[in-house]
Amino acid sequence: MITTTYTCDRCGASQITDTQLWAVGVVVVSWGFAPSSHGGRPTALWCRKCVDELQLLGRSKPETVITIAPLDVTLEDKLREVIRVIVAEETRT
Ligand SMILES: [Zn+2]
Image 1 (cartoon, rainbow, N blue to C red):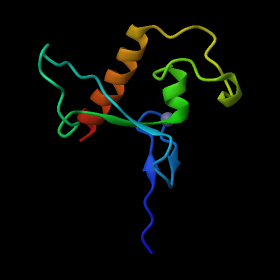
Image 2: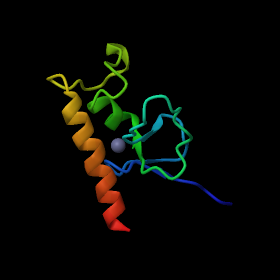
Image 3: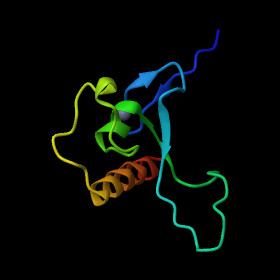
């Protein structure tokens, strides 16, 4: 039997399904050109908890949130954290 485990690149949490995981990255696209697929772009795999902590999907519904960040996360905070994780992954290999 082969078992696949998905691990969050930010916090290291692991799970056996790919649900509630997001490929997170920063993409810059020239105006007028449609973005292509994610192939080759540096992305990290983040779990729901990490995505919610940085409010990457906006504010979560209160009934689905266990802990809510006390302050709003700025766009700069989001970009810095995404880039920090991607750079850490890229320099580890
Ligand atoms: Zn995580």
